[in-house]
Length: 230
Image 1 (cartoon, rainbow, N blue to C red):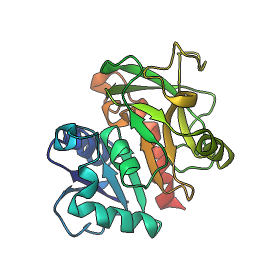
Image 2 (cartoon, helix red, strand yellow):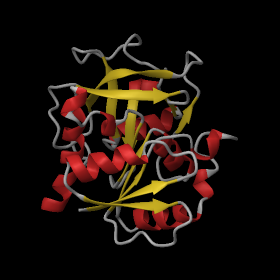
Image 3 (tube, rainbow, N blue to C red):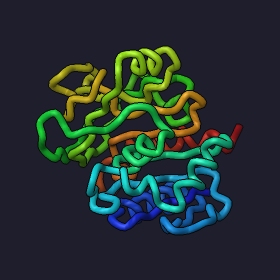
Image 4 (cartoon, rainbow, N blue to C red):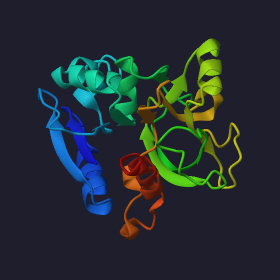
């Protein structure tokens, strides 16, 4: 599978993502500048974390209008894979590719820590091959990571198996204490109805290398890579 990592002014996780996909997972990967008009044959577009355009106005709101985003939307509408992580998740909600919104953390503070999450969706490519009896320790780093949506949309997410991950403690228990940002229903990630567009606030690319003593993120990318084997 070939991956394209989009780079905006203010992106700061693009190199981590390229390293994770290319060096650790051994996949083809190219960088795509936000003004590019060609996805270079990428099968999966990754919108990485950072502070696109300084997060002015609203996180992801300006990046949503970058020239490359029209290609990303077209790619998604044709069934192509798209993954947004942290600021990338925010951008995908702003672009209308994912439901809901990411708003200021309930504690009003930037949160940077290791965080346990558990997979929920049994049908989404990003999670379907994960161990549903396990939790994954994936770093988070955000100030606007509180996932919010209305009650009807939340029910639709549940009914359509679109909730990718929930925040938990080490034992896999969901609770207010284990929720780092106040996200509704403890949601850490969602996908679209057709399950080809994924967004998550935790950073799997930061949990890939044995030198960091955490390789939990590898399982998430490996689950996605099953797509190329089908």
